[in-house]
Image 1: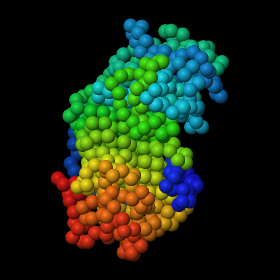
Image 2 (image 1 turned 90 degrees about the vertical axis):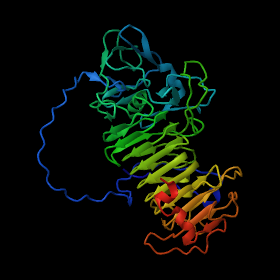
Image 3 (image 1 turned 45 degrees about the vertical axis):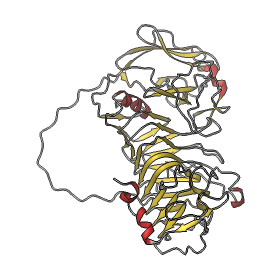
Image 4 (image 1 turned 90 degrees about the horizontal axis):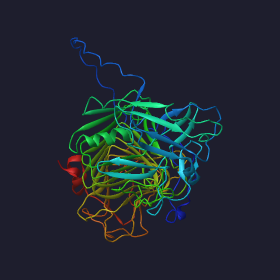
Length: 512
């Protein structure tokens, strides 16, 4: 995929405005984290054939599958009427009201976005999803209807269908202009049985697996028990969705391949306000939602040992100025990200707790790694500038916490980003938290400003030490030559070799 072109901000504007265009996943991002070829292994004896699984009835659909209504080419959505779904007892389980489309705009890619920012006071409509995970819900804008080459794709609200059930779908005349609709009894849908495995759940958008969406698998994994170890294996493809993960430990979401398994959606502060939180109450038409699901793509709450592997995760907001996280890990526990790509612009990555990011690419331009961690280690990663800005804004709770640590990373930039226009970090100016950021043995492109640290507002502590504040050791250029750090701001501390030992390895930073 190609990167969007970006208009560079002049440096004097950086403190006042942060934002930029979001890239698509690069075809060849020059990431130093490609896995080496593995050596040949010796031949092993043949093993007996295992019995094949029984074929799945192709007429059965995943409980989270989009429904497809055939419509004429060039069809347009109407402005009135509804789509409704009933269970076998005739009880309505879902509805999409076309009148609610008056509150959204349809982007060129087919995604629906709210015309006005969603806040705690916003009234719920059927263009919002109520995403269940654990015992709570995330209320967030979504795209219930999308016209494609195949017809009208209908994405029902999350969690409304159950396993092994039959449902009836009705479509009012005029939902699609010129279409006569679907009367009761004319369209039935039968869902698959529960997955056979409780340890591995499979996702494929084509309907051939246990689930069609990652969220469908996440929600079901939560029902298997908070402590139960579950791996969600995701087939290659682009999954246009947001995620909500709550009260689930020991969950691994593993893509089939780093650049071809893609979680992609557009969200930002101007559409859904705040970093996001869950609620115990489902949305009801005409009532205030009470809690915004937030501007990020992934919201993870109260989870431990959450792992993402071999995925691209992108927020495709793609406009100048606007907070737009890919992930918000809102937990005091542990998360790991292995061999992934995270793409946005402002505030790409937000975390708390203890986090380990390994052999991954994180791209952005304004405070695109930020948050409140006890410790967050990036090891052997590429940190890539999309435009002029700042890499880190740390709000570490305690002076003794290590905060953000970058070990043996590469700091690079997309083509066209001006040399000297990216700072290692800037402060949020809050004296109640600490700007604990450390770079150890990192190779830095010329995009990094000679001063290193942006000092307005002043960091906390204003006088850094080996224990707290902005720190650096062993920095080189991309060719491995030692950098001249004489121009670095005095707000940063150059560590000695002895002082750097505390940050010199994963074990030293994270412990056991």
